[in-house]
Image (cartoon, rainbow, N blue to C red; front, top):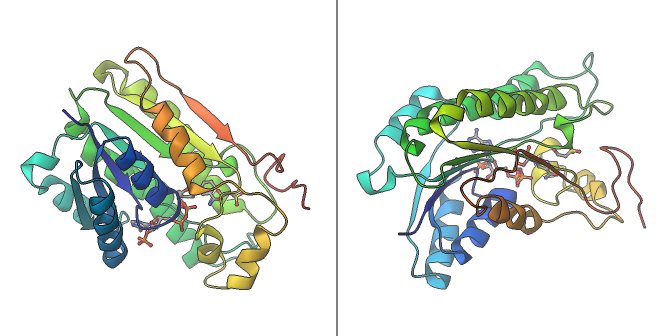
Length: 253
Ligand code: NDP
Ligand code: 8X3
């Protein structure tokens, strides 16, 4: 029987690419995000390309615990056997010093990247238990491993994900649920547009002269990670563009 992968934040970027790559690999897909219309377009496109898989979509704001709990607990029964959870929903807001940054931006990052990931994980664990290949994949970042100027709260939120990877690996050990942290450098997605609140020019400049990673690069890595034999877990990966050495040291053409 085909395995089911639940991807949060599947409406763009890395999440959308995971849906595409994992559909190609024959997984059934449970997809959520806030932008439902985007999810409908992705579902319709993938249904045409891969008619052999099943796809279920639903609107979800991972920051709202009651919504997370009720929507996941009330999934149709055939969607309650989840093999893999990809905690991908996340964002950065602003790139300012602590003294100059906006408290609303801090709240959105912490609520989404840390609390949202926890809410979804807590709700999905009972559905992962006893499933073949039970696995949680958490999207961290190079910002989980280092801190760069003005990255403060985004870096802190991703450092928290790094700590939670380790904590989940310990706590979920008796349940046999694998936990993997995926930590990319620059991936060209809507990430910078969101960080710079729709300033497209500023967002484009982030990737100027760099062969950045694509969502597909990350998705293919995740596909590899979740297809290892039962006794093998890849704990943690850092994936960078060849032209990027650290969060801020980049060799631009
Ligand atoms: P995108 O902005 O392209 O995608 C982010 C996704 O998260 C969207 O589908 C968005 O959907 C979803 N999302 C955001 N907030 C919420 C929410 N409250 N509830 C549900 N879904 C939400 O960026 P990326 O694909 O690049 O980002 C994906 C993950 O990868 C993030 O965790 C990011 O921190 C991480 N990452 C990104 C890197 C990069 O350089 N791009 C590098 C390292 C890590 P919607 O708006 O429809 O809700
Ligand atoms: C996204 C990568 O370097 O902009 O997590 O923080 S970075």
